[in-house]
Length: 305
Ligand code: 13P
Ligand code: SF4
Image (cartoon, rainbow, N blue to C red):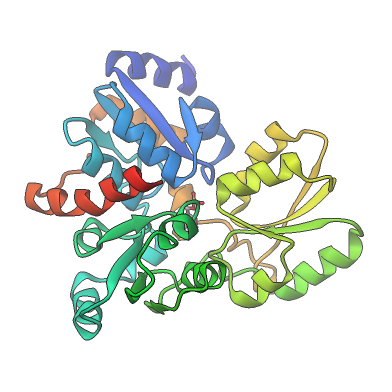
């Protein structure tokens, strides 16, 4: 049996659904039941009637699935698939940040742990952050965590002043501006599209900024034929499926490294998907009190977006 056949057989045996983020390697996207951005994946996890969710993404995404659908067995093929953004926002430091800004409404990007979600009023993703912040009463000051780049972009889009937690994504901060300029010069008429986790200087050079799903819509709707893609290059697999006649160029990291690829997302492999379905581990487990606290701002997000 091939690995894929084994996975399909085990998936049936476990009555499992495989959810994958756009940054997963193509082979995983191909065997997944659903591929999406973090908001779409949270919705899929909340609504599934499968017994087991195999979450091919990073830890905070699988944890979110468990928070919104606790009766399911949620498996993360590699338990070390973290996120530099989520892992650098620690609950004690975050509590101090809130304490220093006591009257603020706390909006946290979904890229954070359950312990941070539990201390937040509202969760957002990059696809609904502008829409959600626009719904907060104008006289209420807002704290935004943990991504300062997304926060700055949301502040610009909404005209709201946001007090930002000083965090960022290691991957989206790695793109080389010099390499971007070279690609741009070599491809007249191309369009630069970027995820809002990129640094301000790069976002200023972009023709279009949006979440992973928004970028996918853009490449289908735009008249441009060549796109310079300022986000994790895993998404190019889906871009080629939805716009097969267009050209997508990823941007290397500084010093020509391939650090534009998220090393945590790429920890998941087909073999580990097979193993987790076979052994029902690594499983996401959560303290029930913490889960209930983290659920409230997530439910608010799902209701408002
Ligand atoms: P999306 O919400 O656009 O899927 O982004 C998730 C993420 O981790 C980006 O780095
Ligand atoms: Fe986290 Fe950045 Fe990887 Fe997204 S790309 S999972 S924000 S480290």
